[in-house]
Amino acid sequence: MARLTEKEKAPFLHVNYAHRGLHTKDKTVPENSLAAFRLAKEAGYGAELDVQLSKDGQVVVFHDDTLDRVCGVHGRVDEFTYDELHQMSLCGTEETIPLFTDVLDTFYGGGPLIVELKTAGEKNAELCKKTLEILRTYKGVFCIESFDPRIVYWFKKNAPDIVRGQLATTYEDYRKDNYKPLKAFLLSHSLANFLTKPDFNAYNIGKRPRKINKERDKGVMLVAWTSHDAVTEKDNDAVIFEFYTPELKY
Image 1 (cartoon, rainbow, N blue to C red):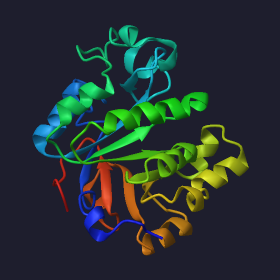
Image 2: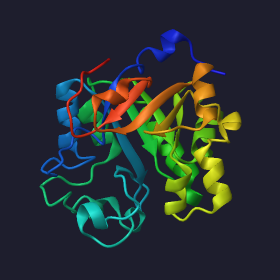
Image 3: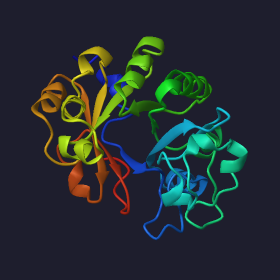
Image 4: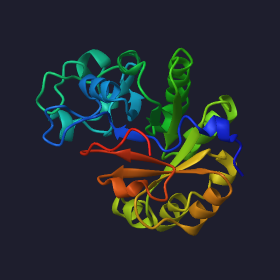
């Protein structure tokens, strides 16, 4: 099933990726901040980050759909322009929401990047196109992933040379997020993979569906998230971690 050669997989295998940059539990270095990516680069880690669109169509780096948790502002990210977002403090620090281009400039020279595209609904294609245009200018090693199979499929169709991954979590997690049972089942078992042909499955730590393990046996890489202990390295091809300092590679 795998389309990548071992040589093509090699830059991504057995790498520890700092989740949203090398941010700190006490939030003095906030997640998805330039400071977090600067620290990850200086330490030599790979990094994972999240991209989505601002109201004025800028590609920004931020995880949540809403600003409440991280910025203390009520509202969705896509309801504000980049200039407005850039004025908002991350976790009460001097760090602010960065542009994707600024993160790439900061992280260049560091380890491989995992770029997660957040679901943008009707603007999925716009987010994919703009993210791709930016990535085409980046000279570092990177891959993309998304929980949304439509985004993974877009990259299969429009940028088949880029390493792509399908993010997923458990049925129970999807149900907690109010997904209907059928959709939760389909997504938790990554049943769109026959269309999207991902190069890796990024799956929540714990028991994985048999299908995910079978795909790994056929050469599809398995990435674990989000790890808080180096024991996660066992039986996974790469690890997305936070709040500890693992080896750069294992």
